Length: 85
Image: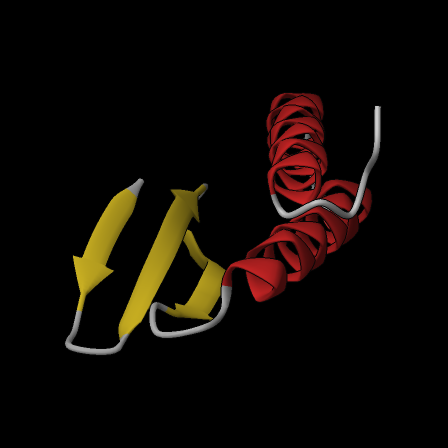
């Protein structure tokens, strides 16, 4: 995984089997409530990559990444008051 930062964006790139995947491109200046939505989009992207994976190892890796993004989105939603416990 490679993290590259610019003044206003954070881009995370994953490299698997010689292919480059851009998973995150979120505006660091966005409001907190937007963060959970970005995390959900990242999870959906990882789910798509898992479906398209050419081997079992990559499929499992992207599935675990999607699960992690979903958990992060849920936690961020709770912090933002979207989820009341």
